[in-house]
Structure formats: C-alpha cells, structure tokens
Picture: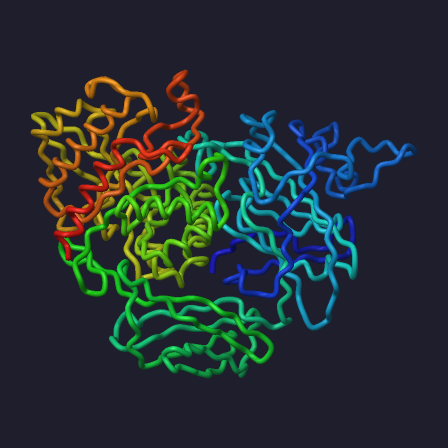
Amino acid sequence: MKKIVMLCCTFLLMGKAIAQEVPLVSNIAARNNITLNGKWSYIVDPLENGYYDYRLMPFKNNGFFENKKWNTTDLTEYNFATSATMDIPSDWNSKDERLFFYEGTVWFQKDFNYKKDTKTKGILHFGAVNYDAKVYVNGKLAGTHVGGYTPFNFDVTNLLVDGNNFVVVKVDNKRHKDNVPTVNMDWWNYGGITRDVTLAQVPNTYVEDYLVQLDKKEKGKISGWIKLNDETANQSVSVSIPELKIKKSVTTDAKGMAYFEIKSNPVLWTPEKPKLYEVTISKADENIVDQIGFRTIETKGKEILLNGKKVFLRGISIHEEAPFRSGRGWSEDDAITLLNWAKELGCNYVRLAHYPHNENMVRQAEKMGIMIWSEVPVYWTISWTNPDTYANAERQLHDMIYRDKNRCGIVIWSIANETPHSDERDIFLSKLAKYARTQDNTRLISMAMEVTKSPNNVNTLHDNMNEFVDIVSFNQYLGWYRGTNESCKDMQWVIPYNKPVIISEFGGEALQGLHGDKKERWNEEYQEELYIQNTQMFNRIEGLAGVSPWILVDFRSPRRQLPNIQDFFNRKGLISDQGIKKKAFYVMKNWYAQKEKEYK
C-alpha cells in the first residue's frame, strides 16, 4: 500500500513524544469521535515568520506551532488568544475579504479537552486541507500532508495529555509547477481546513479498513475483507447485514486480514431504486455501521451496463462550490442542495470535477440514486516527467479509491482532464490507469480527453489513452470556443473505438438575467440556442452513452475577469451562483426526459 501521509516518526528535538504514521481509518464518521469543527483562531503569515527565522531556517522552537501565551515580559510577536477566529470547515478566501485573492500561509489553532485511556488510541483526522499542511499537537509535529482534496490522519496518542490540549495547523495553498494540480487551473484555489476535523478514539487494535461488495466473478455472492491496524492473527471479526439475515464471523491471518464470502441475492442498487443495506463490521470491542449498496457496472461494445442492463448516463458536471454563499462547499446541506438541482434536471449521474469531492457529496448522491464520476486533479499541463509529481498524483488516486471503495454510487474513476498529447503524458497517464486497476478492478476507468480538429466539418477523436480506459470521454465546446451554434447542424463525428462514448463537457457562458439576440454571446438566449443545437447534434453520435454538460452552477475562477459579466465567475452554469435557473436548464431537462423514455 502506498504511503498516504508523510510523517516525522523520529524523536523530535522539541520533545520525546512520537507521532505514528497510520493508514487512513475507513468510515471515520462511524467511530467514537470528538469533533474539532467550530471556531479556530487564525494568523495570516505571508512571510512565514512563524515557521522560519530571519535566516530562513525552520524554527526548532519559538515557531507559531508552540502556541506560546503572550505576556509583556517576553518578545513574542503573535497571540492566538487574541487573534481573529474562523469557522472550520471553511476557506479563508470567502471568510475574510482581505484574503479573497490570498495564496500563502495561514496558521490555525484550536483548544480541546481529551480524557486519556490506556485502552484506546487517538486518531486525528482531516477530511481535507488545501494544500500543504503541517499539523502540531501540543507543540509537537504530528505530521505533514500534501494535496488539497483527500483525507489524512495521524495517530497522536503519544502527543495527547489528559485534560487541556491544543492543535495548530500550518496551511499553505501556494501553487507550484510540480504540484497536482499545477499552477494553471480554472477554479478558485480555496485555502484552508476545508472539511471536517475529528479526533477519533479507537481501541488499541481496531478495524482499520474493510470492503463489502458483490463478487465480481460469481453471481449470488457477497465478498470482501476486514483489516485490523495490527498484524495480529486469530482475531475474531464479523460482518452482519440484518435485512439479508447475514452474520458471518471470520478470523484474521498473520497480516491482520480476514476474508469472507457469503451466498446472497440482495436487491440491486439502481437510480430508480437506490437500495442501501445497513452493514455492521464488528470485533469484540468495536462496531462500525455503514450503508452499502450492491450493483454491477461494466461495458459491452459501445454500451454501459448497470446490473446487466443498458443505461444512458444523464449527467451534469459539478464543482465543489457552495450554493448561494460561494466558497468551498463541504456540508451535507450543500450536497443536498446541489444534488436536488441535478435530480430536477433529470440526472442519474454526476461528474464531480476536477478532484475528489467531500464525502457528503458522494454519500448523498448514492442515497438519491445518482451514479458518480470521481476524478483526481491531473488537470491541463502537469509536469509529466517529474517522478515526484507522478507520486503525488498516484497518492491522490489511491486516497480517493481508498475512501470511497464501498460506495456503490461511484461507477467511474477518472484519471485526468484536458491534458495535451505527448509521449510523456501517455506514459504518466497509462501508469495511473494501471495503478487504478490494481486498487479497484470493479469500476470503469475514464478521463476527459480533447477532440482532434479536422477539416470539412468532421471532428475526430484520437487519443493514445483509448487502450487504457473503459469509456472514451471527451470535452467539446462547439458554439463557444469553436465555431458557432450553427456549426452543430452539419458537424460529423469520427470515434474509431469500440467503446462507450461520454461527452464529459460542453457548454457556454451566460449571465443569468441578461437577455438578447440568440446570436449574441453572454446572454441566456445564446446559451439556450447552444444547448438546443448541441443536443440535436448528440443524437447523431454513434455509441453515445452519456453526457455531463459544463456545469451545474456558476463558480468562482480568477481566469474569468470580464467586468459586469463574469466578475471572477465562470458563467457556464445552468444555474446562477444565486440559485436561479437559466433558460438552457430547461433545454437540457427536456432532452434528458426524452432520453429517459428511450432507455426504459
């Protein structure tokens, strides 16, 4: 298993406490948790004075991580106790108007109480921090993490004390060429602790991870495994699904793994009937409850088959942007609002772009009967030949799959978006695709490709990555970045692969409430006509198995600067940032209603 968190595991100069590296604890919400959400003190530190001395050497002590109590006799130039506070989870760009464009370092601090127990461990879990996080508990380094959209956790048992404790997090969201994503992107680089923070109390030997799913090779069988954090043999663990009258006990091997196979014919999960079963994973001193559905997803020629039945993916792309208030979305309410709009549009599928979204989005979509495309932020021009960049991308892919492997709603893992063709890129992405299959061979692999421009009103899709994906997906912007809406009427498509095709993006911008001639850009009538002409063109594409227009809701982007129209919003949404539907919304809704009838 790839390392998912980089930690300091040696004795620290600042003390003898040790923080241990631990793999992600699955289904953290089902554990015995102390929430650390709420008010955190914060200090903006553009020069990183809290981390480096005046010679740019990292502090061994005296850094902000020590959370010293200010007084008039010491030369201490910070004070969390009197600093401003911010609600966590959130992002600083939308919470503090002074930080709207800020990219750099912000320190966060929170006090909490903890009761130590020799029978339990303390696991400090972050749903996500964007982008580079250094975490300290009681002044000692617990660990570091790079990547803004995946969870991470540390065993901080030896750093905790009985009673009052504090945690400090140094967050840096500066963009760098070799990062994933890189410096060039078309969404807001929201900085901060953007998802839930929890301190889980788990038994010293606990269930670290588990998998429960339909057996891929044999019908009428549920199979999976349970993994303990210790490599301890002969431990009794069990899986139970009361509604299916299943109670199966198994024993761990020398690696702390226990495997099971159970004859059963559960009701299969579908968008029309998204059946989920209560599943309990147990050991002597621990019970973990989950909601799990069962389904199959595969391709046959140019068809996508859900539970063996041909399905058309009626989709929409979504950014993790909070409805109405802007800023990073993270809550269950945010997820329900966005997904209800998708359901109103007629969707049975969402493309969660361009990074793994928060777990609320995934779980709520599954409950609502919405299939999911989940993606890592290998976006545009990545440093293809840098081994550290590849390791970063692979780690994010690992963490995405690790977190969501039990979510039946996810049917597609996406490894990239709109990447320029090159031999180096093909090597990078083919390795990612192969790696994804080693982690999960039960879902489909895809990526958002680009169309090769051809003369004589013919678009040809040619991408060497076609042999590594299950679904050929591509973004096309006829009527916006290429041609006019009229160009759609006689456009022909050549897709030389015997695989299903998804148009992963199309669309154009419109300011909600701006009306005019349908041949003039930026108004609702132009966007409406673009959708009319594009959807009529889609009816002529052989093997088309799904569409996910760009995008559900207008979202913040520093690239979009047109005054009085964009104002730092990408206006391609079918719904405005204030939740008002544009005319194109109803074009897509009607087209999806027709598609739903065709596939009944």
